[in-house]
Amino acid sequence: ARVTLSDMRSEADLRVARGSLAEYPITWALGGHPLELLDSTDVLCLSGGVPLTLPIVVEAIKRGIPLSNDSQIFMEVVPCRTIGITGSAGKTTTTTLVGNMAKNAYGDKAYVGGNIGDPLINYVDNMQGDDIAILELSSFQLEQMAISPNVAAILNITPNHLDRHGTMNAYTAAKARILEFQSEKDAAVLGRDDKGAWNLRHNVHGKLYTFSLDKLDEDLNGTYLQDGLLNLRDGDADLPLILRDKILLRGDHNVANVLAAFAVGHAAGFPLASML
Picture 1 (cartoon, rainbow, N blue to C red):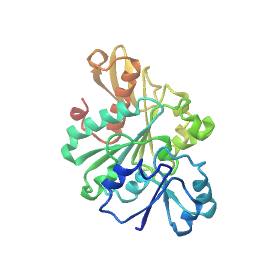
Picture 2: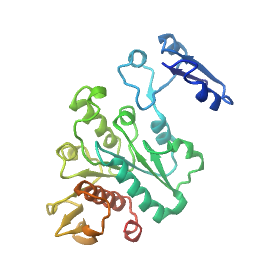
Picture 3: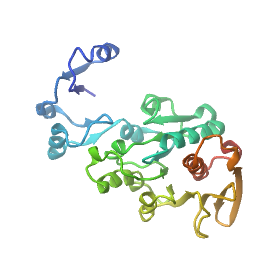
């Protein structure tokens, strides 16, 4: 591809970045985002913090130029199964826990990244079909994505980034995109105790799992806390997992994160020993 890199900052501000990319044939457009850049553009890729209200983005949408980002491009080419985790709070902790479970199960065939650490696009050329990739996804990334992970988790949806999304409905719609492109072979994990996440259960195309700090209704599959013990239910089987007292992360919110991680790991088919 012929790449133009456009940034509001000046040449002096980006001296280090330019040096690190010196080996690549990049055209730099610095100090603004002139609309005429779009005249020779086939796709516009946005960094995470770039709002869709930016004039060049608005103009690109008007002209029918597709938007993308590193997560979308990664999802287009990734050869293995994917797990995506989003939520207003707890997604980094939960992604890290699921990543550690995956590393126990898959060793160096498990990749963890996305919104935390390295973008996984850095490693996609090395990935094989039997690997697994775990992504933390922000609402900013999801806004432009048109592919869903095989296991998609929405932990919770509470007022956040409204300066960017404008309304709670727009923010919720961005989060809900993680489910939108799943098939009936895929799995979704939604927080039972959070109204914002649980209200999206009708958007689930595949198998639904949940997690809760209270006992689950009989017809629900997932993880729950009862009498100081974390449990997993799938169909008729209820399985004890771990005593709450064994969790060294502090606070109920972290118990919820651990329950979420178990639900995601189970939905992805991780062995119980690796998760424990």
